[in-house]
Image (cartoon, rainbow, N blue to C red; front, side, top):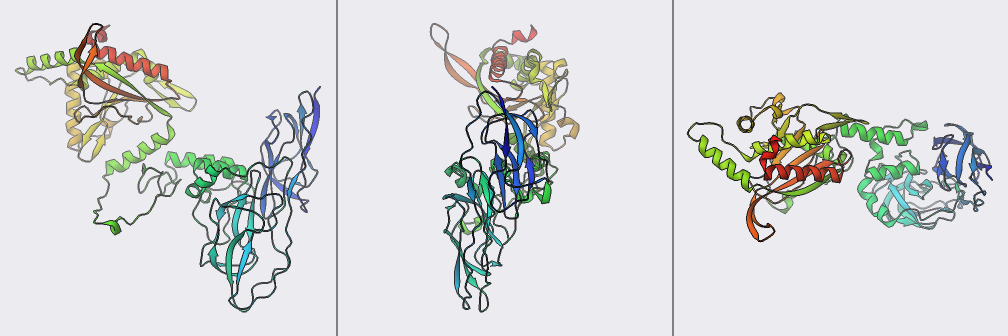
Amino acid sequence: MSQIIEVSVPDIGDFDSVPVIELFVKVGDKIKVDDAIVTLESDKATMDVPSTVDGVVKEVLVALGAKVGEGAVLIKVETGGAVAAATPVAASVAPATPPAAAPTASGEVLEVKVPDIGDFAEVPVIELYVKVGDSIKVDDAIATLESDKATMDVPSTVAGTVKEVLVQIGTKVGEGSVLIKVATAGTAAAVVPQAAAPAPVSVAAPVAAPVSASTAAVAPAVLAPALPAGAKVHASPSVRAYARELGVDLNKVTASGPKNRIVKEDLTKYVKSVLSGAVAGSATVAGGGITGGGSLDLLPWPKVDFAKFGEVEVKPLSRIKKISGQNLSRNWVMIPAVTYHEDADITDIEAFRVLLNKENEKGGGAKLTMLAFLIKACVKGLQKFPEFNASLDGDNLILKKYFNIGFAADTPNGLVVPVIKNADKKSVFDLAQESGDLAKQARDGKLKPADMSGACFTISSLGGIGGTYFAPIVNAPEVAILGVNKSAMKPVWDGKAFVPRLVLPLSLTADHRVIDGALATRFNVYIAQLLADFRRVAL
């Protein structure tokens, strides 16, 4: 039999009027024990209030900005069947009131320790605001600690100059752990009648391990560099965890929440603007995809003085590489791409190509290339599998009725992708002539923007260089790209014996949001069948 259970604010110490700064549930939501209901904020800490029951939210009794205290009813939940387990004893982080600091002599070095933080014995440091040499005042934030339900700032209890920092991001601390050592200024350090300890934090469910070792180890790479003493970013524990997952520096996010607080929607908006290029920056995505002037300002790029190791030469990137680098980095980050490999037997088609070229030598016609046959085969593949001739537009798939094929052309300044328009209406000889002309224009730097736009599908051929297989990056807004390497003679079993066959390696990379593995493999196999017996193109 179902019951309606009220979920209230647990013991939060001496705070009787704490504002709701985030609301995670609405009427009709299904929630489980420990799911966050709201985030509360005092002047020193933020705390998520979890649900103590499983069920369906029937009523929400608070709104953003509402001020609540212990016992205030947040939501009413309809439980299914038996009432959920009784609320465990709340784990409370009470404000510490250490004895007043005695006046100190000039130049004395004092330790600043973690005050009483309740039952939390191993809480990781997620932000560090000071470094050796910083001047700090009483109540300046030293570090932020985070459990799985709350974050808390530890303020300084003395004024002076930081002489030593004894923790780093990821270090796990408890009550009494020494954070920093401070040399007091003047003849006496500031006397603190009552230490400003982390604000009370209560949770109605047992607190799990605060942060896994792997998370703590990653923290230095994804959090912002050390901030000036006292600097502070306002965000709840769940938002901070989301930021670490995305690798976003919270200092770069514009806050829209109450009291200049960063909410989850701010992170989403920031990442979208970064990836779209609306936010400019000089930092880059790890891996070196975007270089100076790029738009992915998420992770710091290491600064190294390479000259100290030996002689170096600085060579600016070409304009083509700068532009393509940004686009490739965006595509690599945004597209869940998978590469599928297939071997095509091109023994017969290569012999046919050589024969035709010999016949055309005297006539001076276009010299047939394997690329022309590949383009023709890909057009046939796009016609048979229309999902490959498409682009994503939000929740819609735009299916194109035209067939424009791009091909990667190597130039002294980098790769460019000329586009052959309406390839379905052109013969293999036409395709060979046009691709040759476009490749020459690309090498001469004479391609126009119109020559490089409107592609439905791209072929990246390394056949003239070598290699076996590779994983080309999808050229958005396309959904697939075909990589081709150098053909090689291999022994192939024909059912009776191994015979020498000329084999062409194919590497198809596809956007998995549109094209699943089965469809991609069928496309690859179909292209290989066309190349093995080109008569199929006429069918």
